[in-house]
Every structure is written in structure tokens, then in C-alpha cells.
Length: 364
Image (cartoon, rainbow, N blue to C red; front, side, top):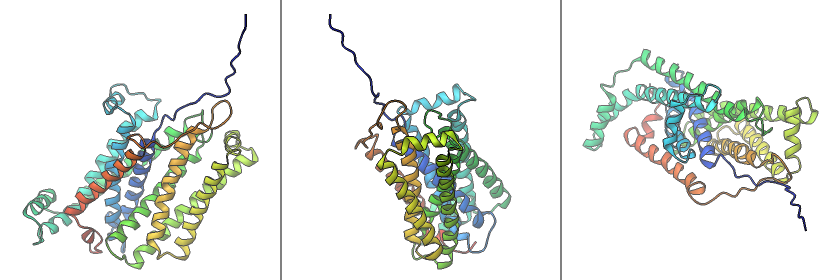
């Protein structure tokens, strides 16, 4: 009787978090990052920040409304979302997130409405609007009166929601002990820093879309962007130092897993190089708003794609990385394009009522 022995070298594992999840982390990060940039001009009325903050609020609203759609798509069956509310699990950051997201998005919509009411009332008086658009502007303006107290309260609520969302999106990845690359307190910090950078970057791009922005506006955003890039490089340096010295076993294990991979080395050099280039341009060439804006958005996406998709390719057992190839269909490239299309639709819908030229005006 012949006996055959089958040796299992590795087990092929499919990624559980698809590109939809990356899009959610990317868009919600851009949203709360841009929301923070909206505060100086809208809430605190800082001189020189009014136009910047209005555009940043537009970025925050578009990305904040699109992000939950990507998250629902990642559930594969949107009807599953109600289970988070019927079966709350206090030990699950995803369960907490199902409550944090409505707080943030609801507060953001209220904050945007209160901030834009006077602008909508002004826009309704424009003689070149269609009757339907003018009527809709008047309806949304609801009189157009400004309420500083209500605006401040809405901003405070949204800020709390933004902090909670930033906390939960970082923690729900960090708690995964099976992937040492994720299981570090530096990860939530990196999410926040790159989210701020991405929000600033997209604000720079929309400002440029509205026309040639003033040099002062670009310099203000470039300085803020430089701070985020410096912080990102510092976080990366600390992670690498902890891994090389072996002071932190989890960082050393993560570094040992990634070290044999040429692809990871190239990606790390690419990420560090693009971040350093953005920092240099923001400090030395702050007027190059279009370029540093593109680089900042690119860095925010690259970090999330590399960590979330690439992190799932790191082997938990056996030899070799788990293969992943971006599919062209709904769960891959088509889904990414569709989410981008949703953002474009929201941009067109909002700027039909409030053109970018009115948002970028420096008057209060």
C-alpha cells in the first residue's frame, strides 16, 4: 500500500478588505482633514483664510458624503449595515464606527448649511440664474441670516465627530495583531497626518480650478502642508528606528517580514521620496500649489493603498507574499472610477448652486 505525503508550504488567502475599503479610508481622511482647514476662516474669521476655508469645506462635504457609500459597498450587501445597530459590540471598533460616522457626517452637513446660508441667499439674487436654481437657492438659504452661535455649535459637534472618526479608523486597523505592520500606535498617527495633507492638497487643487489663487493663499496652505509632511517623515523614521534596533518586537517582526521584498523596498523609497519632495517644494517653492497639491493627494492614497492592500499580502504563515491583482470590475478599477464619478457629481451639484468663484471670494 502506497502512502503519499502532501506538504503544505503556504495557504493562498484572498484579501478581505477590497479597494472599496481603501477608498473609504482615503475619502473620510480627506474629509476630516479638509474640515480642520475650514475652521480658521469660517469659525474663527481669521484674516486671509475665508476663501481657503470655504473651499476646504466643499472638499470636506464632497468626500464626507462619498466615503460612507464606499464603506457600504465594501460590505458587499448594504443591508448588513443595520446589524451594527441591532447587535452592538462594545469591543469592536467597527461597531463604534457605525455610530461615529453619522455624528460626523450629520454634523458636517449642518455646519456646511449654516456656513453657506448667507452665500446661498446672495446667489439667489443673481439675475443670470434659472428660475429653478434661484428658487432652490432661496429654499436652502432659509432667509440667509447668519447665526454665529449655531455655527459654532455645529462646528464643535463636527469636530468631535471628526476626532472620533479619526480615532476609530486608525484603531480598527491597529488592533489586528495578526499583521505586525498594522499593530503599532504609529499607524493611527500616520492616518491623521496624511489625512490632513490630503485635505490640504485637494483644497489647493480646487482653488486652482476656480482660477489663479492668490500667492498668499497658496503660501498659507503650503506652510500647513509642510508641517504634515515633516510629521509623516518623523513617524516613518521612528517606525524604522524601532524596527532596526529591536526595541519594539512588533516593529522588528514587521520589518523582518517586509525586508525580503523588493517591491516593499521600492514602495518605501517612493513614499519617503515623494513626501520629502513635497516638503521641499512646500518650503522652497510654496507658490507651486498645483504640484504640491497633487503630490499631497497622491501620498494620502499611496499610504492607504500600500498599508491596507499590501498589508493583507504579508504572509501570516509559510513563505511568499499572497498575490493580489487589481480586478477591472466592480470590486476593483470600476469601483474606484465609480467612486470618483460620485465625487465629481457632488462637486457639480454643489457648485451649480454655489460657484467656486463665490466660495473663493475673500469677503466674509
